[in-house]
Length: 293
Length: 280
Image (tube, each protein chain N blue to C red):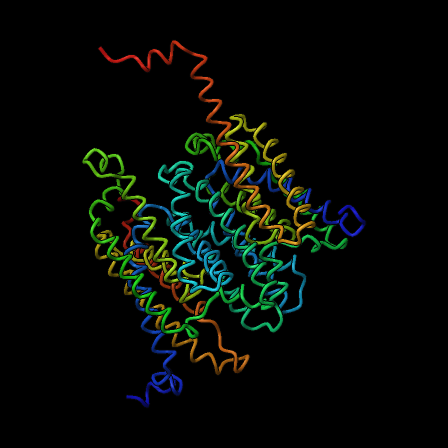
């Protein structure tokens, strides 16, 4: 068995503690991103979901400036951005993208300033790259623990209001008429998303965490219409993409240019896109003949 | 600030602001802020690739911006547009991460591409920038009316024979051209802010499309000029000032719109009385 697997898993894959942390943390991120992502796609708020990844960049660079653990920067900035979007009017479908865009513009401006101050203060120009692109292989155990706790907190926020959230995502008017506090639920959802994205931002990098949030959920919603099935499918796809990506990134150490290794995020993103495109093929085959439609 | 080596910057910044104002108006009307954000950020990966193989940055930006635009258009033919935009963006960024991991020296250049560089414009870049700008304005001028109609009333446009998919493609390609121009000056992150914030503010101030485009251009010009001067004085990145000024102008426009609405209601006491009267 191990003889067959040798070409797939390069030497030392299962012994490396960095790989252990990466595999576990990748799974936690995938499990949290799945349910949150399904709601993001149903509500059509991918832009907001992506915005939180850039917000995490700002939070991370701000924390770097203050010298605290970056995850606190992610969380604080995420909640601040959520509140700002809510104030401008992210809850109305019309003008939602402008509200998100204005917040994102301000946040990215701050990121520019923070990163500039980081680079001038510590004379390490690499700071911006670490924050932006991150790496799952160089994460410390303390951060991993906080990240896992954050993930559980997100699930605790989403799961109790599952039914309310689903109804208000699908039909806000009907939800309001049945006594669902649509605005509060929307705010809770956004706060949960900002935490989920902050969590994934430290594992596969602030920018590419969008991929795990949107890609698997969109793929799952193409395969099934049932929300719970979609969430489970999304988690499965996200875990598969993350783990495969880690294996490939570990193996790529021996690919050209030798000794550098290709980034995990590249593999994860390519796998997610592949899953998405494949799910489109399946749906096309299921579609009835044009005459029947 | 107005010495000879800054002349290029002032010219480029003004051109960029005009284009961003015009294109941004359509981005806001169509509700495509996400695409206006995704195309520049994805194009950044192209610049990284260009620096890896030693090609012109502008070329790399252009190729990836067009690829991103085509990718968004192609993916959103089947499936939701915001999902398509997000997927196209992350794929471009994944490729960018790959390029960055392969290149050796990138950090300072990468940083100025992300957040803008006042002195990043050389005289040899002005001509391509100007040509791109003219092409962009021509494209907008050619499809101004169908583009506006399909943005505001999609169904009516369809009924009058305007292909909404084709218009979406046109719009995305225009965004790609504007991106290629804007990113070297303002940076990949804040290009979109220069497009969205002035246009959103202009739309709050006037309902007429022509006037809104003019106002958006004006606000974008003021934003860029203020940002470049402030960046020159403080040495802080241009992007920070563009982003901050965008938020400020939008906030002021929101306040102005609220005040005006309040005044209109007060000037029509009968209407106010009717709405305030209890139903008997």
